[in-house]
Image (cartoon, rainbow, N blue to C red; front, side, top):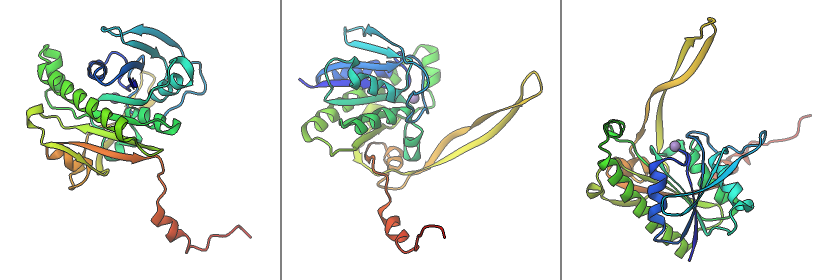
Length: 269
Ligand code: MN
């Protein structure tokens, strides 16, 4: 029976983490190792200058749950360096609240959890679901049925994908970035294997003054949009498909290597 390590970046209390863990029990033995607070947009942060605390608990169904002050990639590192007694066969990070598409992967703590597994040499999947307009309102009004149904569907799909990865394996340094559109499960068109698309960020600098008159800043603005090109992750979601993008830790641009061979680079005089 495979051993599955689950982490996330929204923290151990995220309902989507619990939904994922419940679905994954059908695939193997599950251990959850998650941060004690929300680390969204922490990227691939490794804690180096302060100690890490880990407490041990259990999920509702008895699944072992480790909670740490560290980041998502710390979770995977701590687990694999010996805190979790048995080495996992696969690492799943998510399910994140909010999609991780295009250049988002460089900001995402969710993707970093899977990336850390790939660095260490384990197959991994990062899973994220797009926000819908009503999500916050639904949660606030107590009518979370639509969101819960989407999350449960996503969790079942990730469980199936985990089976596929365990069966076929992934090359060293390769992991999957999976995103779900914010539409009811019965409207999902299928699963597309995609490449990264291009996000369009709409960040704005917000300057305010503190009580002493000194400026402080927020990087704010509207949520990003994207170019919905066919074959990309952004295109897949915009057409109602689940997107699965194989990512590679080798970010080398080989075409540019050839180009730079003609630059005549040399040591300073
Ligand atoms: Mn998050």
